[in-house]
Image 1 (cartoon, rainbow over the protein chains, first blue to last red):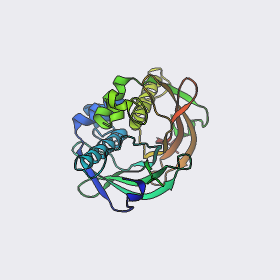
Image 2 (cartoon, rainbow over the protein chains, first blue to last red):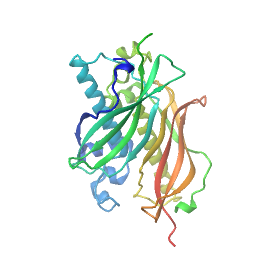
Image 3 (cartoon, chains in turn orange, blue):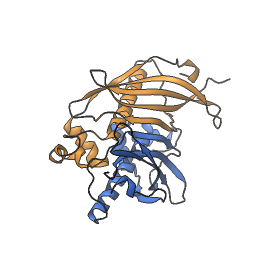
Image 4 (cartoon, rainbow over the protein chains, first blue to last red):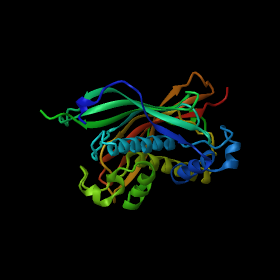
Length: 154
Length: 154
């Protein structure tokens, strides 16, 4: 699929993920060992009153679901493998609510802009708005992802 | 330490981290299982010609080093524990160069602004520029972190 083939607009569901005490602690022990991420008892006396997920964990789960969804499309023959996925970074990443154990968040993505990338004229930057919401539609997490995608030759 | 006590300017070293095939693959298997992050052989035929670290891994390592540095200051009596570290998100996160196995990146942080946070007048937002560079001073990663910090009462 070329950049030109990707429609703008339209929210696509990437998948859902249940944050649990176990997966919250497992991520945070390696990458964000603050008491309210790794210690059930200490978390009770924190501002949050409980364990909560590391913000970077909510980001890593987005990536995990994005790749799973992409590879499911490849398996279904809807997309060729694209092993050269390049991202120059993300923008406006917001952690809007604490993610407590038991929260199941559904992640969505919505492409909204195609931007020229002068240093690599064969590529263009696809910008998408990404969100994670719970089953009451409350917004927990959002950011703008950016990925360089090949333009149709010629 | 209150928001008012934190000086702006001045780059502080958070620490260094060596990305290895093993830690790159361990992160990516859980959170970003693209071939060029998890499969040495497949990575050779990718755009990158080798394994590279997931961008979210470079972010998670920043968090790990930030917390380690913070807790070292607490142990040294230079700072009280502050268990209620709140971040509303990050801005302008850039993955500027691929991080190959063997790269040792040194992470720095530099506070540059204090911003009012109208919904929580007892807090203020400290914004800091964060970077990760190799031993030749090449920039691999940057973003603006934001953390809400208590203002001195009164």
